[in-house]
Picture 1 (tube, rainbow, N blue to C red):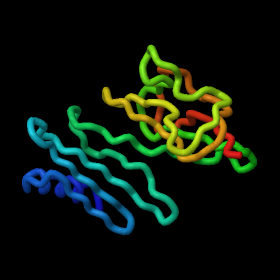
Picture 2: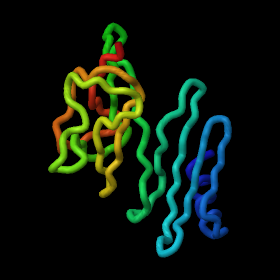
Picture 3: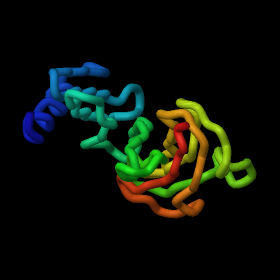
Length: 162
C-alpha cells in the first residue's frame, strides 16, 4: 500500500462518517480515527509488522489538535560484545527525566526497573509521551540531559538486563 492509497483511504473514512477504521494485513496495520464532537481532524497510525517483531506506530497525517499515541520503546543491543541494552527514542521531541519540574526523576542510575516502568517523558507537539521500558534490569547510564532535544532512534538509557 503506497502513500496515495493511504491518503485516499483517509479521505474516504472522513467522508463516510465512521469514527474509527482499522485495516490489518500480514505486513501493515492501519488505524484511522476521525474526530468526534467539536474536533474535525483525523489521526492515522501505520504500523509495519515484520516477521519477527512489531515496529512502533508512526502517525502519518495528524492535525495539531489531534491526540498522539505514545510510541513503544525501541530496545536494541548497543553492540554484539556488550552486555548492556540501549533504550532508544521512538520519536523526535524534548526529553524530560521528570513528570513535572517539582517532581522527582522517573529513574536514577542504579535503579532496578521492570518491564512497563516509565523511564522518561518525550514532549512532541505539546503532547507528553511516557516512554516505558520493555525489559527488566538495572539502569547503568542516562545518555541524555534533562530538557534536551532528542532525535528518532537516539540512545537514551543503557540497561543491564542481568
